[in-house]
Length: 213
Image 1: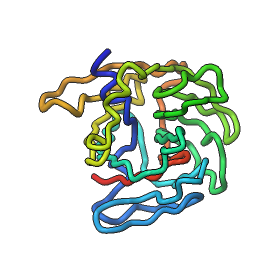
Image 2: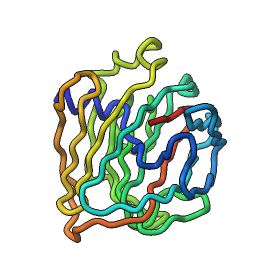
Image 3: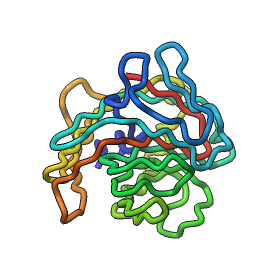
């Protein structure tokens, strides 16, 4: 449980979306995205559906490796971010879902409107069916570990490594706090494997963050 929480507590963007300082084919759809130095920033803390569509062909086992750093915006008690993986087709307008895909998501919300989501710190796995329909397929209450979210901890880039096997739906989420290859395993509950997609979609909700490989 500890390994799951340590990783899911700041889930989920894959560095396959980055190529050195330059992004591959992409579109900044909403939010205020900018590449500065070696990092990609989303600087609009008011954007609820900020996203960038990034071309990244995916099939079979895929490695997503990155670091993420908090830049501000959650002082009002709300913020979240995550990554749609194995997206079949990008939608270049503001949207809730992202075609056929899975969304790995971190949520901090002191007063969530969705009663399925615990107040405070949590993580979700969503199954996206269309650009407007998503269902929660896994839900994790992380409030026992909210003390990790200190100013000192969040001011540093946190490294992550996630492997998603598109053939089986098995996900390995590696523990960023240790040097070995310890990881937590979860499984995507989908019957029509194998997963394939040509895009990933990086999203934020009411928070400023930066990312790098």
